[in-house]
Length: 130
Image 1: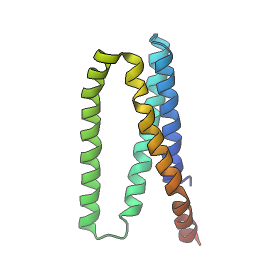
Image 2: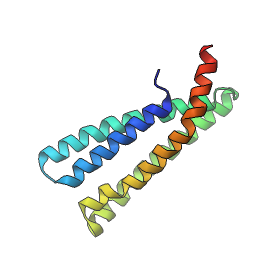
Image 3: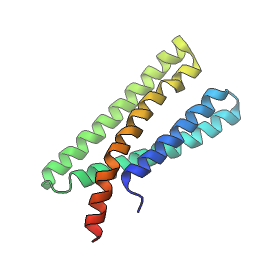
Image 4: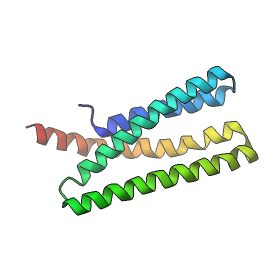
């Protein structure tokens, strides 16, 4: 209905809002709101990206789809693990604000890539429903 690009974009915006809330303070309310926003954003981005990958691999044979999905899962959770480890180092060296600020350029890149990808996705969706 919305398309994976728009779902990813909404997730990126919510993630940026969550980072902004976290950078605004360290009270329990700040942590709670940032956690809720970032949790919802993570789910939107993850589901949207998984759907986009599934659509991209739809024309491949089943072994290639399974391989593509497994590589995606491995890469995603490897980056998540490394991000968790690096967050501790960033927090220790540069502080809480930097832990959240470092995410913003990465979100911007993902957001811009989905803007670039969305027109081709809209054309495919229109062709599929016709």
